[in-house]
Image (tube, rainbow, N blue to C red; front, side, top):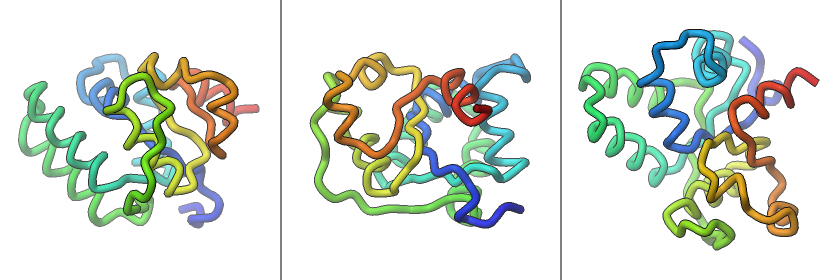
Length: 148
């Protein structure tokens, strides 16, 4: 397993988690990203109490079986490939205020990437993106970036 410093620090927006659980395409970008985290352990997932709470709420809302939710939560709690952070100041750059805690998680956790399909995050202005030390990317953009 790669050491912590060798892993790519990422935050998954909730829509990425949902795409993973609902996708039937095992070769999708999201499935590949989760394999990099869960199997190959090349990613360090950054989470906050707020992101985990939203993950769990949405997984239940889209009727993911409780056993799968419990397995995911166990991974979050016990895996060395997960870093838990406490939020400080919440950025306000997203059009959707509900997305700002995801930005805060990436910021506090010193993420390299925030992976999302959310246009409110992807469309943050270039000048606002420069305030962050992480890149906000779609799953396909992430895979292209790490292959460069």
